[in-house]
Amino acid sequence: MALAYESKVPASYRAAFVEKVKAICLRLGINPDWLMIVMDFESAGKFTSTVTNSGSGAVGLIQFTESGISGLGVTLAQLKAMTAVQQLDYVEKYLTPYKSKFATVYDVYLAVFAPAYLGKPDATIVYTKSATTDIGKRRYELNKALDTNGDGNITIWEIKQVIRNRVPITVDSGVSPENKVLPILALIVVSFLFFNRS
Picture 1 (cartoon, rainbow, N blue to C red):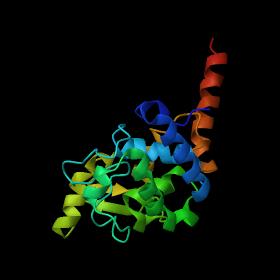
Picture 2 (cartoon, rainbow, N blue to C red):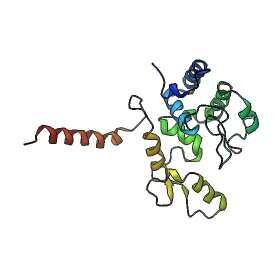
Picture 3 (cartoon, helix red, strand yellow):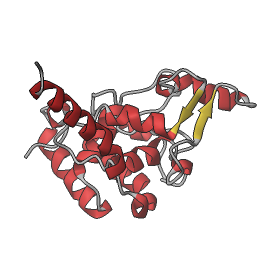
């Protein structure tokens, strides 16, 4: 069975890439679809090692940053010069310290996007427009697309909603049972209305 977004991986290295993703995720103890979903989001669907964010300068499959690669023993220039398959080694190296915290696709994404917020309540504000520092304001501006209600705050809940919208329906996204209740109730109501029309 194909992985999520597998068809977006360039054909020239798709097979090797997919096999390596599966091996990495086996070691991390996560669904390989989760990592594919995160890499699709972060690489803008390109799955290349060279994709670069013009605003932040982040590069590659999970948009590595200067601060994020501290301790990985590699530079952004070196990461960008690698093939996508080679860069997967550093994706694994980056994620490994958080492996015990991965229960859902959202945990994997937060480890990449803002690891300090892993395990925090959904209402937690990650970035805010009213930050008191220039770097805080810049982080909000670079990611304001995640502020889905436009209130000037990016919360963990909003980040989860954005990722949830990218999760193929066939993938176990790690949505908790309580978050599945409303869609199920909605389906029941729609079914009731449909079958009881006069």
